[in-house]
Amino acid sequence: MRPWLSLLLWLFCACEGGPPAAEQRRSDLASSTPPPSAEARALPDDEAMPAYPFVEGAELLRAPARYDHLVPRLVPPIGPRFRNLLYEANNVSMRGARTAEGELYASTGAQIAERWRTGAAGVSKLFAIRDALFSQQDHPVDHDPVSVMMPPSWVTVAVAEVMAGRIPRPVQAPAIDDEAAWAAIATPAELFGSFPPSARLHQVSTRTRSVLAPDRLHVTNARRSVHMLARDVRAMIDAAPHGAEAVAAAGAERISLSDRRYFGERLRREHMILVAVENPNRHELADEAKGLTVHGRALPDEAVTLARRVILRRRLRDGDIGLERYHLGEPAERRRAIAVLEELIPERGDATEGGVVWLWVHGGLDPTGVRGNDATRHIGVFRQEVIAANVDVRRVRYLSKPHVPIGGRHLAQQLDNHARRYRALDLPLSLNIGSPLLIRLLGELDARRPASTNNGRP
Image (tube, rainbow, N blue to C red; front, side, top):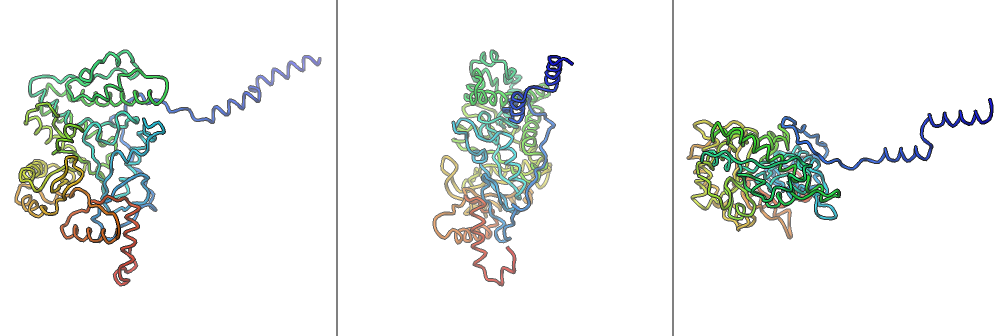
């Protein structure tokens, strides 16, 4: 074979065998680099429920029986916790840190949801406030939403519209990438139709998306949240021809569905206590849009009563619920709490199957609802009133607020003193400390006990 023909044959085989070595190395490097996170476009399937999470057994501890009424805080990183204690968790703290720019959360919505699920699965039960658009586990703008809950007050609005002979106007939700359609929605009222508008959600969702994060992610997150809300509203509008009761049932079912889609059905049933603000103060109503009414908007009492009854009964079927918050020193608030209990879990009559009703009770709080007097002075009288009412007391529990502060010197002794007092009142003890400090304090208290009382047990 001639030399030049051999050379051509060698070059042909080399080309057929693949790219040159330098190009192959670049290709291998590109394939080993994970692609940037894709924008989620499709809404989650209504039927798709998260699985019950796996929990590492080595992280689960057991508090001594004399302290099994303590209610510490669940804060990330979750880590070791007590399997036989109730916990409280705060929506903002559970989202974790923000990015360096401070505009988005560093964790994705899926990571935050998994944090809630894993944390809850390792404890007896977990209190979680899930009540308003910006008072729930998903943030509608600052991370990709998992299962945004339609606020309960929206159900009241839809019921009121139908009672007045009107079909509620829908939430506008153009295709997520239809920039012109979003830009054409000029006001929050146009975006939200008959329902309480959110200026921030309108402002972000109607911005033109840039090609760069975090602005693009902000806009996409907001539009996905609007889509979820629009889908819930559409279910109520579809039920409108069948009357106000059907509208309330449709709205309650969508709220229940969002709860279960976020936590999972088993976790919701066995470990979650979802808290709603049935009795909001002025700050919560006006500034946080909590509760079943709308600040500055007249809604008939009949609509509020119907929405409350149907939503709370539907949620109670899924598991425990918590209701905020009642001043037991005020006769009117005691009567209000008892009326809700009689509506949900009467001793005689049509009681809702499902979980337990937890009442968050107090003895007078400041306007923010954070500081003030606990309910210990009034709990005895209130219990007698509940017993005298048409209430199944086996399905009522109480959590006294505000939390009992543990701080300064002699922390272990403080904890023991408060634990004894609350045990005598048959009340859980809400604390302002997390698991790491509680582990240390219980260890100190256990070390002080005479050896004859320990018997080798924790």
